[in-house]
Image 1 (spheres, helix red, strand yellow):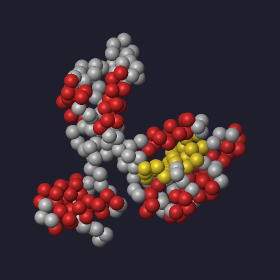
Image 2 (tube, helix red, strand yellow):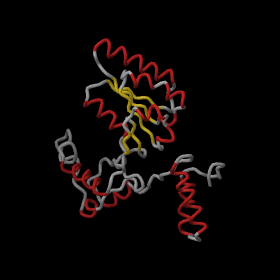
Image 3 (cartoon, rainbow, N blue to C red):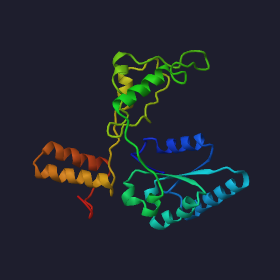
Length: 238
C-alpha cells in the first residue's frame, strides 16, 4: 500500500492502525535516514519472525520518494514473496517518484485534507468523549470546560492549506476561548515543495499572474515561494 498525502494528514497513524488491527509486528523506517542495509535487516527479521513464531510484519517506509531506484528495487523481493506487508508514505506524486514495479504491486490511496465539517466533528468528540474533556483528571476534576460560544462554533483550522488536526495542545487554561483557538492556529503551513508538483503549480501560477498584470496574485504566489524557502530561481522552473 502506498499512502499519498500532505504532511501531518495521518499516514503514519494509519499504518500503525493497520498493524494493530491485523495483529502484526510494526517496524518503521524513514527513507531519509535508512538505506538498503537497514531495509534488508528488517526483511531478514520479518522472515525470522514469521518462520519462528508465525508473526507477520508491517514495514512502514516513510518518505519513500527519497529512495533511489536501486533502493526501491531492494523492496521488491520482500513484497513479491509477502515477507512483509509494505505500507509506504509519500508527500510527492508516486507516479513520478515510485518505480513502476512497486506501484503495480501496491494499492495507492490518496489522503485528502480534513474539511471544516470533519474538524467540527473532531472538536465535538473531544468535548463530549470520556477520553477528552468529558473525562476526569487524577485530581477528580474535569479536564477542561468546552470552549465558549464562538470558539466552539467556529471550525478550528490547524492548517488552512493542509486541513490537519495535529496542532492545538494548550494546557492549564481555565477556559477554551475563541482567542485560544485563533492563537493556536495562527500560522498556516505553506503547501510547497521545491522540485515536485507544487513547485511547478505555484511557479506556473506566479508566471500567469505576472502576465495577466494581477499584482495581488503575483505577490501571493511570490510570497508563498519565499516563505517556503525558495530564494532563487531554479534551472528547472521559475
